[in-house]
Length: 61
Image (cartoon, rainbow, N blue to C red; front, side, top):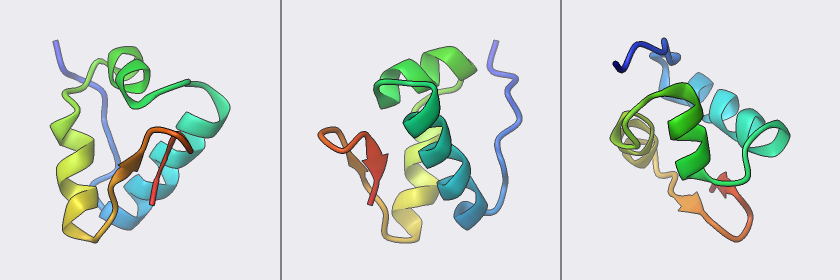
């Protein structure tokens, strides 16, 4: 069940996701599993504003 409410605004989503990655999750896959969301719900809106996941830095850049 995918029911976690993510911020709708991509810029706020960016801040939210990067904070979660920094403070709580070691990877994007762990974040998605922990929040019970499909990765595309994060990657697509962030790609639309020019951000992609950097696995080495564990953040979107």
